[in-house]
Length: 422
Ligand SMILES: Cc1cc2nc3c(=O)[nH]c(=O)nc-3n(C[C@H](O)[C@H](O)[C@H](O)COP(=O)(O)OP(=O)(O)OC[C@H]3O[C@@H](n4cnc5c(N)ncnc54)[C@H](O)[C@@H]3O)c2cc1C
Image (cartoon, rainbow, N blue to C red; front, side, top):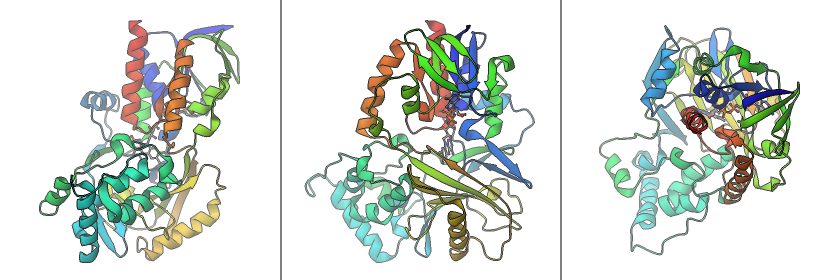
């Protein structure tokens, strides 16, 4: 039987970052797909460069960005000040909504300010509970902001009852703002959020993946090989090609699937998620300028967000990604959704007499995991068992969390450092 010190499952950002950080250590990376990248793959069609969904990068650790860029010589990588908006009825409001209520019609502005004030001011009334995500939205922003944007938008995205989600389901990705921030923003705009600028390589998100892969030994990467089951007691993994004895196994496969492959009894109902159908659409000529992405809270519009690739490198043909959220067990009728999307884009004036010349679609399943008190408890409980047997679940789906690719790299590096220090 073959042996490896570190068996790494998945050649997305998390798996490749782990292997890269292990340096000269003994490792084997297995990847079920025939290509590396996981959700950070890029599709190039008829001159259009598209990711699986808008993948724009917000690096908070300059050394990580420098490490990646050092492995991407000669590439055009732009850092762009983002321009993001909300389509609210017939008007466009700056994102985030809660900081720009003064851009609403006067009556709606007064409603939002009134409800926000009474929700947030100590002594202005009883403190509302924050037991779940939906309650948190009401308690922190008041009824009007919650019901005009935060609830309908997030219901379209997560495709579930927001009361089922943990209060911190979006972690640092949720743009919090206090009353003073909101009032201050009415005079001097400061819409800085966690992602005020983003970077993007001309060749798409896959270029960051390739930079990671350049630090991975090619002979230690096996594509088209899936993990099937794990014998925790013997530390033996069965794959679609062989049996491998390991000292440690690092998996970026979705957490409930890993638990099942390890034969661990678990509460399967604790794990729910949404699927996102992404359409990448290329048209024959330019559309709107000065916009990178737009949020659509309106329930009558099929998508929750669209993004404009062509405004990053200022190319001359409209190049869109369009995202639609579905419950995990929904049957996704792609042709019907496509027809609705094209009609909605036309109705909203995103396209006029544009001709569609190239397209691609993909269903990301899972896309956003539903972080709940129950899922958090189950992940913590099962991780104790897995860690005791040398198995580590990492990444967005491995860790069953909400995170960015930079977070994936930070986590992978920390784990590899623990291993090499041990
Ligand atoms: C709609 C959407 C938009 C996003 N936008 C951004 C963004 O703008 N910026 C950003 O930083 N991040 C963004 N992300 C997050 C980003 O995609 C993830 O953080 C990142 O791709 C996760 O990488 P990963 O390696 O952990 O997981 P994955 O990319 O899922 O990789 C896991 C790999 O494991 C493989 N695998 C699974 N099971 C097995 C098995 N049994 N055996 C072998 N291999 C297996 C899979 O084939 C896959 O290649 C977005 C995510 C979504 C859903």
